[in-house]
Amino acid sequence: AHHQIIRPMLFAEKAEILSYVQIHQMSWREDASNKSDKYKRNFIRQNIIPALLQINPSFIKGFAETSDRMLLAEKALQLLVDQTRKEFMNISDQQISLVASPFESEKDYVLLHELIKSYGFSLRQAREILRSEMQSGKEFFSEEYWLVKDRERFVITKKSAVDDQVLINAG
Image (cartoon, rainbow, N blue to C red; front, top):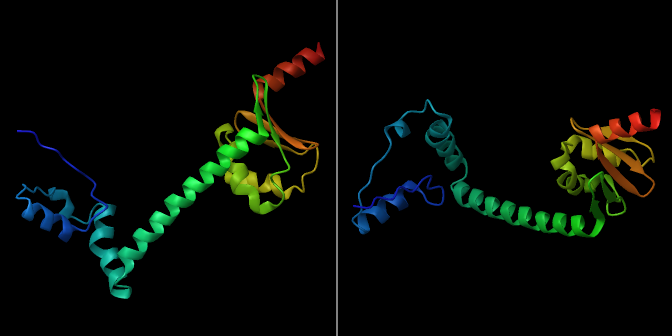
């Protein structure tokens, strides 16, 4: 017999799942660990969610709607990131160049972060970069990369490439 285990079943409440199982004459097995609130997920399920439901009986519906909106917002942000990367970012072997003009104010730091996080820069650093009043020559560092504001663009270079350039220029 072919058995399919589906979990976690976050899309439905337990009563809905049990009803579906009964209607479709399916077998049901509940993990014994679900009864213990020793695990954080169970503590939340057994204690926190019931308390929230007492305060707001629509909590689960509202939470699901908020989750859906967050997923849609994430998709919209990803489209903007992809478009900005394609239009304003140039990646070569030696450096990454990002036109600074799309980042007109400090509030654009989330978009900037999405573009530079793969180079090790944090959300806090993205905010600091935009707070720096776009001063030319201002430098920021991640573990492996160096970002400098150069006139109308941000230039990101791998630290080893910068070290190699310094050695070449020094010799």
